[in-house]
Image (tube, rainbow over all chains, first blue to last red; front, top):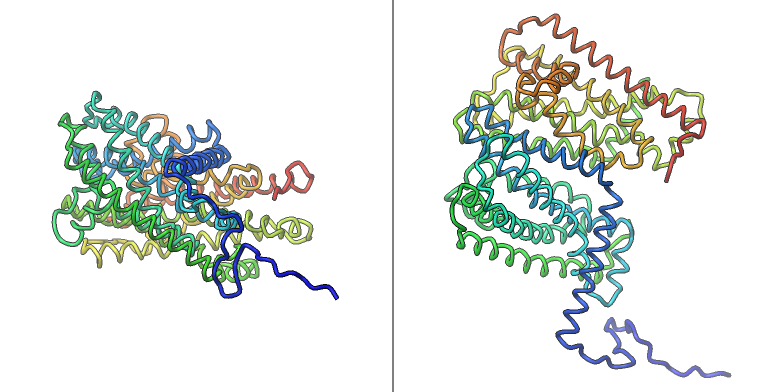
Length: 293
Length: 251
């Protein structure tokens, strides 16, 4: 009769805890951790780029997508002409061109659902690397696309509709809008904590955020000053950045207070995104609730 | 033909997510109404409510109704349907029309949001005519969805093109500003586009007496009919390509 020797197997124990690694790993240095994280983000960005190339060719991007977005800006600017106010038309045109970056970054909500639907999320959760970093970098193409189309829309629509734009300040305006886009990307990552568990919610989440930004962030009408809507506007991405961008476009100086406000909002949403998404992923692993479809 | 409609109705009831566009697009009316209210132009509320309805109807057709054939392909029923003696083209047309017609209640929804949520003066002078024109426009967008269906089979990147087919057509259809404000060549294209006639007729029907009603209604009917003919012809041709193997039902 053969007796089997009891072996210690690395993995989950009957009690539910994790067995230690057979070979105790050395704790990596902070620099090594940063290097690993940077590599993960770089691969995530590369995968994003590949996704994007699969979605658009240069021709469909330029004559389909970009033309559509310019038409979107012209459409909403038309509201100003409808009420017979050239200043409202210019206000709407600038706001709607600037909002393209932040709105584009909301695409990460769908990208994350894509990971789940294509069945790759399970493997990401099994890997040793940070799933949060992978998911956070899988929508970078949306951010880049949003910024680029926003820039093109600003450059095309401004002369077309006579929007006052101090051209010398354009690089700084774009830098401010870049910050707003990052800020909105962080908000979108918060929403992925919901969409990753309930994929059907993604359309409502992005549509709700789009409307909230267009109503409260100073895109179509001035930012509400008081009340609950005023408070909500101040913690929304874009509000502070758009205000600073408008001042710059009108020939004013850079409002450092507004830029600091936007950076604080970005940091706040970024931290919340990390907490919520990490928690949501842990929950799906613990409860085994991540279905393959 | 009724059984095609009944089958599509059952499929729609079991897929409530298909109604998402109808819920989401009208959110844009909040932006319109809020803007009008803050600029003290409540008198334009009816016009913008009609704009929001047309946006909803068009996008529902482009994103959802045109998807019918793609869903059939994904589920593997398209190739089987093409093997049967029954006329798949007729079935597809009826199913697309039913799906597109679900956008009709959005018109009422927009009027209610404007009046009850924002307290704006929504006024419809000729409700019967407004409903008739809205129904004709819905038939037109269903025909557009049919045309898109052909594209969905033919072109692999059709899904990414769906997004591109919204705002340019809203401008061309004069949804926010009359087509007279468009640049010359675009104005001529818009004159042959059923949506521009429908949008202007809807606005006029809501506002009061409509000049040249008979002629304009006839032109709208002809343009919608032409759109339907082009849509049916395109899908028929694409399906014949599929039958002869010139187009492969990928995936």
